[in-house]
Length: 211
Image 1 (cartoon, rainbow, N blue to C red):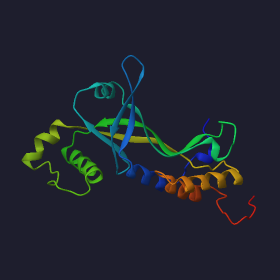
Image 2 (cartoon, rainbow, N blue to C red):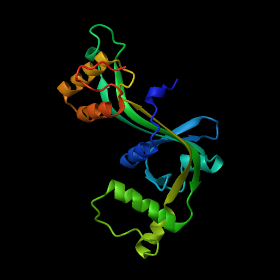
Image 3 (cartoon, rainbow, N blue to C red):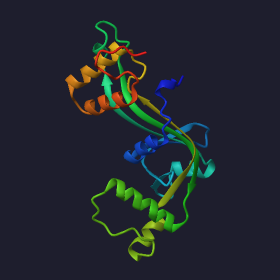
Image 4 (cartoon, rainbow, N blue to C red):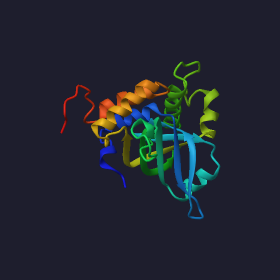
């Protein structure tokens, strides 16, 4: 069951997360009725998810048969070991993360201008330092490449986000987790503490009792 305290309702925050991330998992429906998952690079642009690939392949076959898709993006920030809050039991062990799940309809983009715009958005995300000529369908060096590359747009119907950063933790557990992350100071631990402070309703450390 999806716990309400972990739901992120801020659309701008969710869009910023999608702009940050470049890798997700596409869910399509195979011809045999089984769901099929495909990890791939993506870009979130103008309110749509775009991805690209060859004109053939299993995911393209699936999309042509059924346009319904799901798409998920997740980022794990920190593993929270049980001993941060519990000396004996393993139960408190968990992970803090952000995730977004999208339901929508996938549509193969035929328009070369839109394809070029989507591919440009990819390059701006994956190669922000530049080092290439602008992607222009009128450029003969690009025209054939754009035509032979399949670009797919997911028209978003539903979008939900889940951010888990200890929002359900009681004050003592919250402080032990925060202190444990600060002391460990590995990977994204500092960023995790910042997310805890931004999202948790009782992040103050001045000893005040909070309702």
